[in-house]
Figure 1 (cartoon, rainbow, N blue to C red):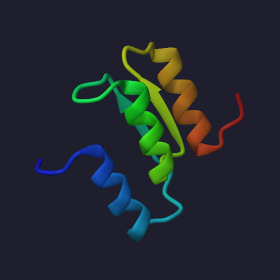
Figure 2 (figure 1 turned 45 degrees about the horizontal axis):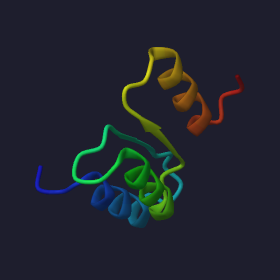
Figure 3 (figure 1 turned 60 degrees about the vertical axis):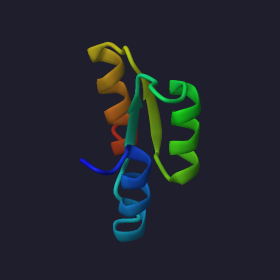
Figure 4 (figure 1 turned 30 degrees about the vertical axis):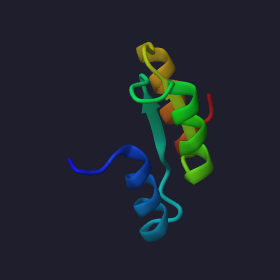
Length: 69
């Protein structure tokens, strides 16, 4: 609860470098696009801006897991 998603991405990348990470953001203190760009720079495999559909979420999950479309 005291950490934001970017801090979690950094910690996960240090301890589990091959774990797939899908970052999601609806904005907040910064725009969703800026947040997702930073998440990608820190090691997120893909970003998904809110709002998104169930189909978009499933496609993103399949993508980070390497499941063919």
